[in-house]
Image (cartoon, rainbow, N blue to C red; front, side, top):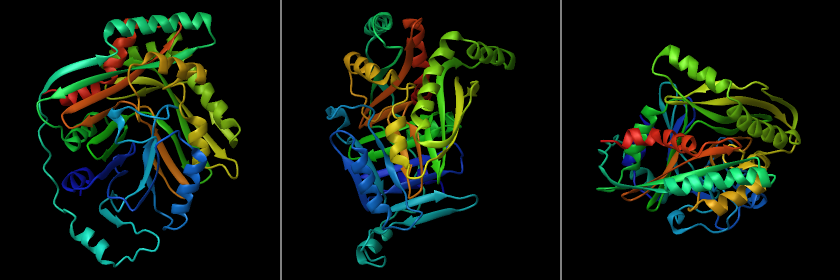
Length: 410
């Protein structure tokens, strides 16, 4: 059974979908047994304590799913009212895909009876048939923030800052807001994204009136016991329409001084963040060509072995945000982002994923959007370094939101 179509058939305030880069690694969840969330600044020590208290009292394979906001703001604007600073949920039900079958899991809270009447009534209420997904309504308007003129002004401001401050890179984002003729079906939109964006992380978190969803090419980290995997993804190019043209564009990206410099900030930052947390660390010294359905990126893989006592919360705190979504140095870049961007990033570019007792996986919540009834906000950014061209960076962001644009077109 397709987890996404199963999920679309269910009702309830909390629904989510997650799939890794493998098509067989997909699951859907509904309901909430227990959750960990915060509405002020992200406190990783409190998060660790609360999550451990849950995981220590549930079966070993249980996982909590959710996300963390991008920045250090302690309050979010009304657009993100359904998404606090962080939220990790142990769902009531999960549907997981296996190689040739599906597995339905019912999570029980500590002290709750598995055969209790409330649990049984929730099981009976599950809709087993796969839902037929709705047709996308037509978009009637679009507004970008910042608008093109303001974007050029902001890039020029950043370029000036490179020569007068210690700032070396800043990632500036744009929000494209679409109004549609009718309310959007987030599950229909995610279904189209799945088809259009292979080899990406796919995520959808729906709560109340809001849904945050996306197709991210970027892993923040994966932890399996003591093993840690991460990656530097920065530097962007396009795909060619023929094999020869595509190869030429790949070589152009690999030999781009500007993109290699942008990539190196990310690679070096990840190395610095993980050095004190690992007893063995390997970071690719040469970037490779990461090909996506439409675009491409420079990619450097990172593998390591964690020191005893290091856990997923140490990794989240040390790695997020990387210069791929923030900038370098961190504090200076965040200051610029908060000064220039005319919107709250919320969960955009924050960690999204899951955490278990001794394993975890988080993607970076980029190439993402937020749905509230008939409105869709698309978010994407571009890494700005010395030598960046405002027009080229504008088109790069347009290319990145192109995954959504192609699937919302009539």
